[in-house]
Every structure is written in C-alpha cells, then in structure tokens.
Length: 608
Image (tube, rainbow, N blue to C red; front, top):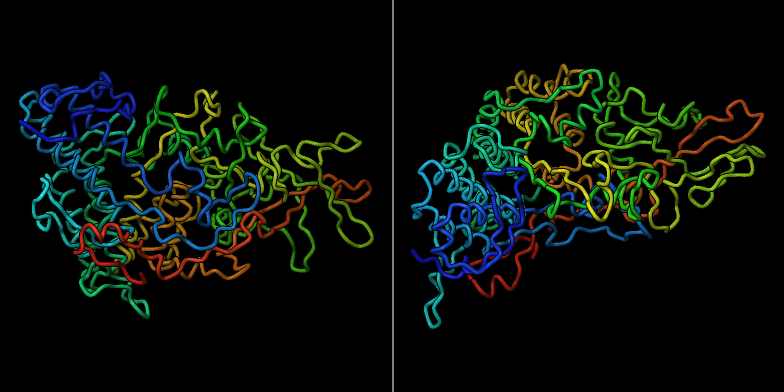
C-alpha cells in the first residue's frame, strides 16, 4: 500500500483529545513511511488526532479578538479599535490540503490490516465527519465549493490538469453532501459519549446534519424574501425557496433523534443556583451531560489563553488581564425573570438617576444565564466580588460632577475612586472599558490565567441545547407552533425564566443570542436569517450597530440622602467609535483570484 507524500513526515500530534488514553499513547515525532504508519494502530490514531487539531475556525477561545468583532464584546486593551466594516474574507475557510490529507487517510485506513473491522469503521467515520465539518465551514462562508468526494489527486509534470479542476457545487448541493455524509457515517461512530467530548460520536454527526439542514433551510427561506435575493446563475450561491421545507424537516428529524436518544440533557445539576448551573453546564468537564462535541485542551502542551487574556485585574495571577469585555448590547438582551424587557434601568421617566444600594442590584432577577455568561459589577468570581467602578459622583450646583482616577486609587478618605478593574475611558492597557467581564469559558482553576500554564477550558461546538433550539426553530418554520413552544420552553425552563405562551421568529432570534453567546453562533445566525445587514446597519449611535458600555459610579456626597449608593451611565464606547456595518457583499466571502487562476472553473461570488 502506497499513499504518496502526505504521511512521510508526521509532526508532533497537536491534540491529546482530552484524556482519551486509548486514543493516543505516543506522539509520532520521527520520519516514517506510509507503510509504517498504516501498519501501526497507534500511529493511525495519531494521524487522526492531528486532523482534530487542524479544524479550529471562526470564533474560538484562543482568539479573544474574534469576540470583539460583533455585538457581543469589545476590545478593552489599549486604544480604540476603528473597525467598522467586515472583511471580504472574514472567517473564510478554504483548505483543500486538509481535504486531500483526509482522503489519503481514508485510503490507508480502509486498506490496513492492523485494525479490527469495528475500529476501522469508527476511524473512517471520524475522518469523514471531520471532512464534512470542513465542508460545512466552507459552505457557510462561501456557498457551494468543489466537492472532490474520496478522490486523491496526484500531479505529474506535463499532465493535463483540467481533470483536476472541479467546478463549484451549488450551495444546495454542498449542504446536501454534508447532510448525506453525516447520515452515512452516523452508525460508524460510537454511540456512547466520548471522554471530554473530544472525539466525534453518532450524536455529533447528527448535530452537524441538523445544523447544516437548518442553515440551508434558512437560506432557502429568508434569502428569497429579500428584495434582491443573493444568488448566482449556476446556483453556487442561493438555494431555491421550494427546498426550505425539506431542509427544515431534515433538521427537525436529526435534532429529535439526538433529543430522544437519552444520551444528553439540558444539564440541571444546581437547580437552586441557575446561574452557576448554566456556567458549569458549558465550562466544567467533569460529569458533563450537555456537551456533545468540543475542542478540548489538556495541560501540558495544549492549553488556551482565554482566561489569561480576559481575567479581571483584581483576580489576575500574571501580568495579562482585561483584554476584552462583553458589551451592554448583549447584556440587555437577557430578560428579567418575570419581565421580558431586559433594559438596565439607569434613569426614571423624568431623566433622573435611579439609585441602587449595591451595583449588583441593577441585575437582580435577570435571566440567570446572564450570571453564567457575564461578570457584571459586583458579581462573584472565584469567591470574591469583581468591583467595577468608573469613579465617584457628587451633586454640585444643580448637576452631577464626576471624579475619576488612575485604576486602584483612593481619595483622601480612603474611598475607592476608580477600580483597578475599571471601567475607564482611557487608552490604558490591562483595564476594562465596557463595564463587564466574560464569565463563560473563564477558567476558575488556580494558575489558569498564568502564562506558564494557561487554561484547559474546552470550547463546545455542539451541545444538547442546540439540538433543542434547532427543533424549536424547525418546528416553528414548519408551522408546528405548539411543538416549537414546547422546545423553546425547555431551554427557558432550565434557565429559570418564564415560559412563553406564544412564539415568534424574534423569540427564536433572541433565545439563540442569549443561550449561545460567545459560542460562534451569532455571526452565522444573522447571516443565514439575512438579518446581519439590518442589525449591523452602520448608522452612528444605532442601539444595535453601535457598541455600548455601562459605567457604574459610587455616590460620594456626604449629606446627600443617596450618599453611598450607585448610579450607572450608558455610553457609546470610545473603544469602538464606529457602528458595525455589514454590507450585502458580506453575506458570502469573496473568492480569491489565486484560486481562479489555478482553476478557471471556479466562478466568483456576488458583489465581487
């Protein structure tokens, strides 16, 4: 058996796959022939592990800046970020080298004699799952792209290369391929959840099938409701409206198969503390019953810097801290438990300040998922409060005066002026400027924020709540509103907020926003629903497009009846002076001219 080129040199494996001791026993760090690789079961699995380490795209916790691009968080390190528009290649994925490597692996694993048939099928299923995941990341950014199947192309100088040049698939055709691959391999894959969810299982394949189908259904539905649908003559971009129902039905069936399997659940291990319960359902690996597939990290060698970069200054264990922070736009989309209006009350109807005894009182009775997602002023982290204080205020000559200081300074009476955490309107490093910190994916483990160790926190790609929300959305789009209500209320009930009695499309949009914040859903959701250009409209001070901060102030005014209380100012953040502007051209990544030069059969996307 000969597989040319790719496995001649094996690099040190990138991923230990989360304590799967039987998966990876040693790292291949020497030159081996292809025959040697596929004659050794451990080496075969090491190659597969390497593939898992090559598929981290989009927003993820080892790229904190990726969270500041949308309307979830902002950069708070240093001076302003003048970003406004979205790049033509934002989160674009085009990796036919990896596709070729996967196809070479499939040739080898199908031919090897050192694996039993069950293991052979499992490894084939995992490789094809990774390949389907790669195609999914391509299609959601660019639309239809060339589908090469299992082909492994070998170029010989002087040969006719036209046989190697495949045209782009239709957008529908590539989604169909992903869906069919997931269906074909689901029974190859293990049925029982993997340790730390690092490896693909049957349920991960069904989740990818469900997500691909709900994306395709959304595009078929909402793209065709635009005044000028985005499409190409050959269907490389754009899906016929007539296909929407089929995709929604596929999404619903796949999601319900996961839901009814009994393998996962909406984790509720702490019903008396719904905020911490939500945090742990996503961020604690031990005894986790919610995460289906994750990008795992394991010390030593494979750790991420999210906690190191974003921990509050008051809790930092090294010099790094406060790189980015959630914004008010996101925080106010979390409802109150018995009030769907999530606006933080800062002033009354007459424009006068609303006074709070403690800063955290402004967030009382908020959707507990807010506590599990965001550290707001006064909230507890690792056992102690996170003090966020922009300064002091006092009333003088009929108006409120502000006093600020360098972070951590106190006045002559030893009263804190501006917290070491901020927020501030300076360009200083290592100080918050939004009024909030991340909690979701922030690791509470000692030393997790140090440069020497960093964090083992995982990044969930699929979890059970998404299966429930896909079922809710697909049911709604199919006109099954009773079933849609049942599913969306499962998620809301676990969160600890009031159940809905009616359901609208806007309810689905909002529920996904707050449930999946920072999980690489927001950008793709708004694109597939064709809402991105409406929400990120580029209008200065628009409440959706502009990034907003919330600054808490202590009233230090002896003799004033409100002395010692707290007020808040809502302000457009100076760190993001321009509103987000998503243009029609951004619905599909541009096709690189170099790809076209190599393969003239690849056509450009709209607006190029």
